[in-house]
Amino acid sequence: MILNINRLELDFSNAMYLKAEDFIDQKNHHLKLLDKNLWSLSSNNPIQFEVEILKKGREKFKVNCDCSEFNTNKKCAHVLAAMILWKSESIRLKVENQKMSSKKPKSFNLRSILDTISHEELSAFVQNYAKTNSKFSIALKSNFARKLNLADNSLKYKFILDSIIRPKSTISQKLSASKKKLFFDTIYDFHEQFGDCIALKNYQESYCILKVIHAKCEYVKYHFLKNEPQLISIIQKNYNSYQCLFNEELAPELTKQIVLDLVEFTDYTYLNFDDHSNNVFRLLIANQLLNQKQKERIKKQLRLRIPFLQNDQQWSLVQAILIQLNKSILPLTDFENINLNALILCSQYLFDQNEITLALELNQEIKNRYGSNLAVLLLDLELYKVNQNSKKIISSGLEIFENTRQSKSIVELQPYLNKSEYESILSKIEDSFLQESKHNYCICELLCIEQRKKMLSKKLRTLDFDTFQPLIPLISKLDEDAAFQIYWNAIDRYLENHLGEETQQKVNQIFSHLRISNKRSILQKLNLQLNQKYSERKTELNI
Image (tube, rainbow, N blue to C red; front, side):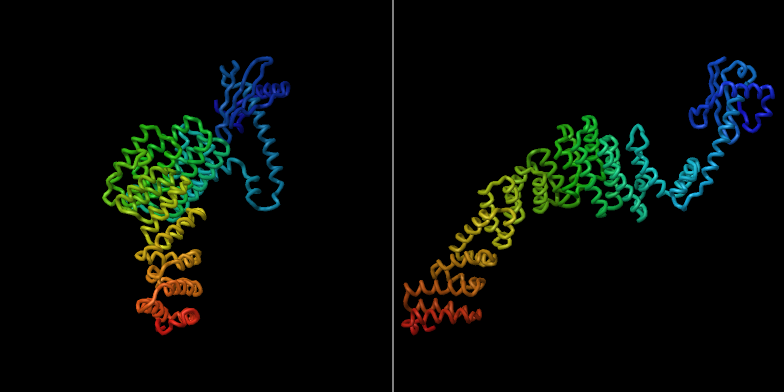
């Protein structure tokens, strides 16, 4: 039955009013709030009954009582008593609210507004404002998404991100600057919520968040923001978040579900192959999460993609993944643009994944195909360093110099070697090449390494004159005192054992070079030494 709170006098007789008032006075009952807009009044003495009144509008109420009188007449003193009690309670609350509202706030700010308005007013404002302001609506949903529990909680976060950037439906569809900013702000907020869930050990919810932002970021990168640094940084953070999740003690069922989802993700057309350090394959392989069936599925998908790969970096990543899954570098997949650079990138990726044996095997294959290369040889050094194989380090260092003949390659060895290994390599190089005039330019390059000049000067002083002469153009790279000492030692040893016209020619060659090179100071010192020690041969030498 529907009653109007302000028309009770018309709906009930005076006799009914008296009975209701007597009931209220004698029993002293109070209404109980059961739910929003629903109240109850009950009694066990002298007659058991229960009244329910439900507010249906500003003045209207739906009423019910389980006593016999109400069942017969649809009216009773119990219902009237409940309505009188509700009205008196309502009046009291209004008076109290008026008293509270008479206390004027000291300042006009957000807190004073929230303290003044009712819950219903605030709720109505939020709903209306969210309808007209999409940014506010997104912020509201993203901040309170975790409060709602659905059968699949990832749908909450997917709905929010899809409402910002809708799936691409036309080639001309673009992403505005405002949408881009809102998307990034929302992703950052979701990352914070992910961290909160990890801290609270709510791993299921944290994965629901991560799964959605991972897929959406990859999708947006492929279709809208291919080279956006901010998005690339977020994607890197996504993979770090996955690793953070795997580092936790997850339930086996959750781990299995994550792996299944990631393996399925490898089938997506918008999966990227341009990041060697952060990708879904590295995540799965490094954590040893794949069974044999899943490995075969991934290998099959990768082989299908090979004809469509666009550059060396993409091919090297795919090839390295296949090598890891096969545990063998052979067979190398066919790729029309396969080249030295692609293979080196592939080897570097294997090294980064700590696949040392496979990387060394691939390096050897590279050298078999293309010959020695500084990048490959330096990578070999890194690999041997990991294995702490000093013998291999030294032999590899010698191989680098033998194949490149550049001082730069020697200097680049330093980060990979300890001091004794570095000195050993340099010493062997010097001893070998000083004896071979055809490698004189190597000595020249070695002389460019400042810390080796003193050692080389000593070694050069021991050379006989015939070996020394081809090195004359290179000695100028030493400082003046060291160069003079080398020249004098060579001339002095030669004059002690030789006479005649040939002697004159060879000594004069040295002096001619010094004159052309404008080494006047060294010439003066040599003349002084010759006059002091070989004065009787001055005419013979014709200097």
